[in-house]
Image (cartoon, rainbow, N blue to C red):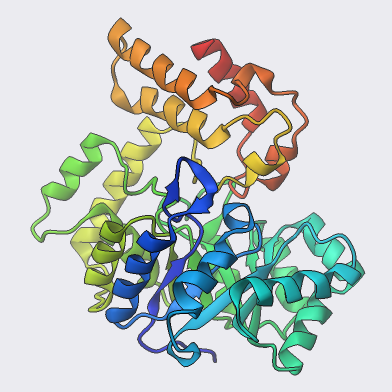
Length: 376
């Protein structure tokens, strides 16, 4: 069975610090410092993907990691995008990824964001066969896939493709019993096939760190000092069969905090599990939209609506508990700033592309109607 000794925390190049609010304008100099601290504390797993940061995440890997560290000192993962056109594009995309990252091979390679329609397309044009060929020819060491569908679909994929070395699943304490994500059931399917699990979204795009004040007070009342981030990441890392937990770190402070408790990793204790149960109840009462700000929806929006930002503003109304003119004005200012030069919620044409790409299965179109009524 595939194992990664002493790694446990992975660095996802998905939410890197940017300049002038441009996702493609990554602050390479700042990221260098993040990479340095992560590696200095004994960690080595980096993950990128073709569409991250409008295609610039792989370049950041080259500039901030590959050109600065010996290739044997780190593990590198990349993904084949689900938007692949036909089988001729597999070679085109893969060679472009090698060039962007500045490497000759990847340690881990995944089919990205598998859902039933994507799986059907990959089966038809040979996606699974292609990454198996990459492994056989030495271009990648381990092959797998990231997954965003039902446990029944996961079972079918693993049954049809025993050659997959690992599975990447969205697992966090809020989604374990979610009727949309079904994280617990998907986890159990992967375990039944004895597949090592890489966890993505352990803090749900920051949603399990930026928690309501009531939940923060519950954490402060604990006997042993801890943090919201530590609870969330260690929750996932404490699960049997979890090989690695990815964190899309955005600042040096996040790197510093994460490595501080993961380099001497300790599984959660009973008090921490009890606190998490209380936090789950509080979050469900306060946050209506469970968005992780992955931004997959934004790239497909023809109206250029900043969907994650609008969801964040909408959620903040729910969690603030305030219902006065002052609070209302603050939220409207935030809304107008977010949509400046972009699309408003009322510009939604109901095409549904955002919902097709959303890993969280959010009913984006209906929320756009609610948001437009609230702020416009």
